[in-house]
Length: 618
Image (cartoon, rainbow, N blue to C red; front, top):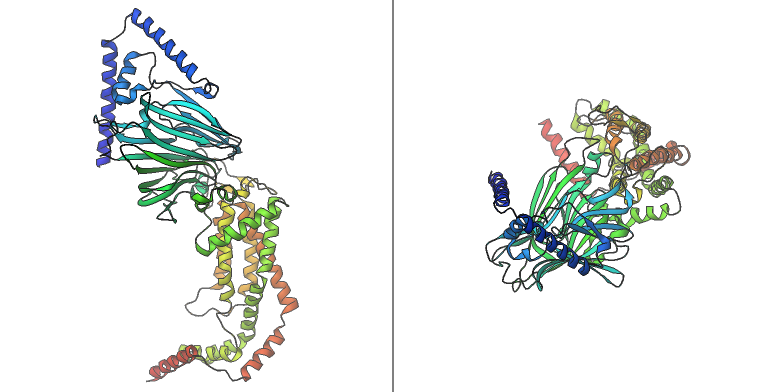
């Protein structure tokens, strides 16, 4: 409630200030002679500025004025608001910094980046990828002055000076209080780099900035939509940050979230495949971070995903500020971010957690990058899938062998079930004895599946987040990092949980997994009381996959389709050419004849079951 009240008061305050300025304008309306003198003076100012900024002019883009430079009353009102910083002459323009990969526009008003464009990438509808555009970002320093003003650099005009340092472009933006007293934003752009060196510093402002009150850096950004499905893109759009000496944390991906943290090294406003990052080797002592979800439902026109915010206090030492940082506007790509090892920006890529992320980062990502240098991207997925399945074939063999053993024992298990149908405890006891004598473990079929889980999850994270797959086509899929579409429903029509389109790769993957489960489920042990019905799962799983993957990356569905086909082929080979049920049966009979030595766990379980059986009889 308090925040809402403050907002209302601010609006009323701005309305009153505007009204006062209008009143002053009419009260102090200049005479024609004064207007002529002001015009001559303004021409002199502009001529001096043109001479001073000759090296900058070819990269200046005029903006719509926010202060009427021809209105002395408006200028007087502006200078009255900002006090000593009124020394800087207001000039509405932007300065361009660009190299072969990145285009930036930095505004005189606020000294901040007002446009950040990727030169080598486009969105799903062939529009250049913008991270900052049309006021979606605000980057300001908020502070108090010794004459009791509360100022934000959003309201200050900066004076640009563009120079070169070797091959680097250096832009100094200064909000001056005198010729040698100023607040400076310094940008340094290197050739072919997305990372910008950025410094905030003051000179001679120790008597102007009130160091007894907080000085904070306030960075806000609304994520611009880049993909054809805003819900899918929003799922991987997330505020990530590095803090407390390397600890990686994230705000919620699906809802609103906020945190107050300490020792923040970098903050990443990730927009699926592109990121805006603020980093420093001198961590911020603390920070208030917020993320607001802007996506309520799938839309073909809505333009933003999440709204991010960070409030970071800056230290004032000896009445002055010096903070060395970096700004990154670029792809969330392993190859690019790996260049900046000292900042650990590569950790902002969502590889997955724990061992899953390790497999993704150090095995699948470089392995796929290697394959895609020699083969088309879709073919590279197929080759990688074949190699992964062949590498996992021993695990598949163990799983199928366990199923075959259970199949051989099925008649004896059925016989025990009939014999002890009225005594569940005895039936379970005798069944376990049979397993022990035969050398069969009912859990042995689960172990191979468990071993495959890290691979399954790593690939689940790899395909939707791999930058290498972005906008790479294969067959009917025009983007392997997004869903393929063979039919688009009319605008406004959507099936709940399915979407407004039909994707073919998920259909093929669902059919393949149905046949795979048909082969495997029929060989499992009979359904026990309290256990799930395997035939129901056999039909449910493909149906769920069809819905779940319809909006996922087509590369992921392609992988599951090919993977299940290969697994079916491997199992057919094992069944028809490797395993012999008669030999398995003979081996089990031999195992039954051998004396079995119980381990401590088996002995304890047997004793517990015997005690339970005896207690039941009593």
